[in-house]
Image (cartoon, rainbow, N blue to C red; front, side, top):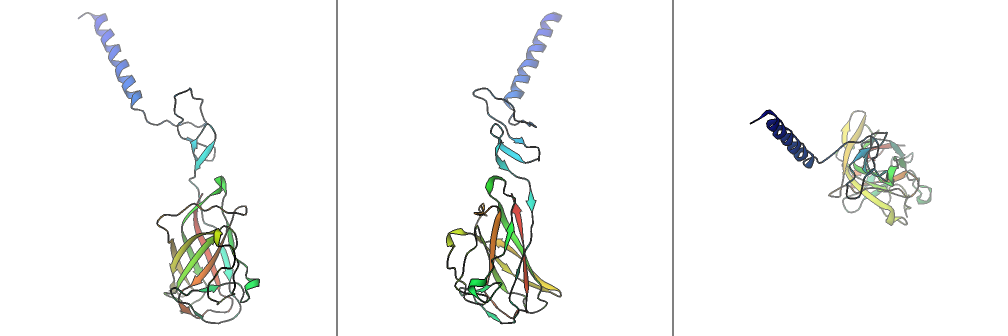
Length: 227
């Protein structure tokens, strides 16, 4: 076979394998959204902050890589009145013994896209003895609820039930300088949480065990937030 014929066959093979490789290409990376013709699919892209965008042409559909862990503190009243909560009949841990004076604590989420996922929380309290094994339920709310009772009353909601977003079960482990627990969502999956008021998420505590608190005992919530 002559040289030119061999060269022609060689070039034809290169073109064939190059087209085959392109057909197998399933993804591309772009720093900025490109322009597409009819029939073309828009690939994923990253915005300048490194967040994944599902729809580059509209700069929307974010999947975030950010994780934040803000903290929020609830301080109970200056008394040592014992709790006697139990499974099915929990009591409210709150900032005041008077229902109308209860202040519902809150924390801030980064509100890009309007939603966040909170798969777990950490709760710390400054009591130094007697709270190991105490079971707590932590509720998240998109707006602050109101209660018919104050601290130590049987847990109930007067208004705001439609704003309930998630619940985490948490069993305290006692240490020498405080007690702590890791709470996981009671749902099979962690649903996105969207605040009603800017970027605030509210929370409260139900206690399902008997325990004697200290005066002014504090509870610090640290949510793990994907947003």
